[in-house]
Image (tube, rainbow, N blue to C red):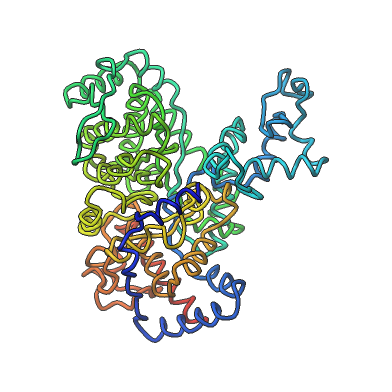
Length: 548
């Protein structure tokens, strides 16, 4: 894939925007100048010195993280052994036992207990490689895209009771890198909603056809997506019992968070540092399925998030996202219809936040028309407040106009450098980050699936420095942008969107990040969880920069 991409770009598809790099941000004050000098010294000394500097640097939030993909393979092997799962040593995947689970589980012929891996280093290493991008080498017929997405099926089957442990793992890793907030994508139970969707069916049988949209021919089927049709289907799904699964899902999210707090001893004298990391969820909707399932699960996601947001400022679920490979046949052929679903459901549940994977594509993966509209439709029809990946933005119809629209609307792009390289074969000069920066589109770095990629957020910051020569103020802006565009409730700490120079009127004149505040500023911070997290970030920057 990487070779084909380079050929396409060399043949004239390279974007002129890359020739116009964004200006780097100048240090704002003496503290930032001192930090910049320390950063440049570490960068000049060695990659390891730079990593050490960046690991301690405050990073704000990771806004693009899939829970199952964030867990390292070693944890899955341990959990599978506890669950008495088996391993298929040929497929290098977990398998269910065929006999009793306890005390003596039985595996199918040629399979072995997962616990066997602890006594067989070769099997253990092979499983870690199978469940991740570790040691992956491209071979004919097996791309990084294949390896990456195949991992999820291979390590599936582990009990949901481990979710609290998984949250502890990602929170502990975040705390160790001076992160403070995570928005984690996760798919709870939705089998009843899916079954109801299939039982009720789609309003009329889909008839795929080619129509002209935005001056580009794209696969487009809008059957059944008139607002009246979707409203009728929504009413039928709710009347048939879909709300029962809302209760189930909210309980699942709450239990996972409660288990995490118990593991970390939060609220006790022995509380782990990870307790300081706040977690909210985005409901993952699987988009590579027929319309009747996608709509039913999307409706469930909106219902769950809306109920959570109605419960107050400490909602566990703050929004939703669509997941699965964007180049999947169903994801591509159903894309426009799915955006129309979101357009309707957003009108019913306007307070539910939406972030969408869009533009996680590269030339050669799909026909050229498939690169021309996903990001724009995600924003204009899907009401996305953030875009995940956005790699193919320069191949969209009127890319210059789209970049301006993203900047004007303050739509943030979640940048996942290692993931884009591993899955799409896109990096450095062929990545869209320089185009976004030049157009003043807000961006923030995130990990995507740090367990599968065997990375962390520090790695992504270091990669941004290596690949794009970003400066300390550039990275500081990414950290600030991450919290500015979080889905936490309340107004921003800053007076103007994405302008980190003037405080909200409630805190004007206050020493930013100070542990003590005026009554008015303190009251404002208590009333706005988002502003409170932003204030905490500024406090952490004060501590970090003063230590250099």
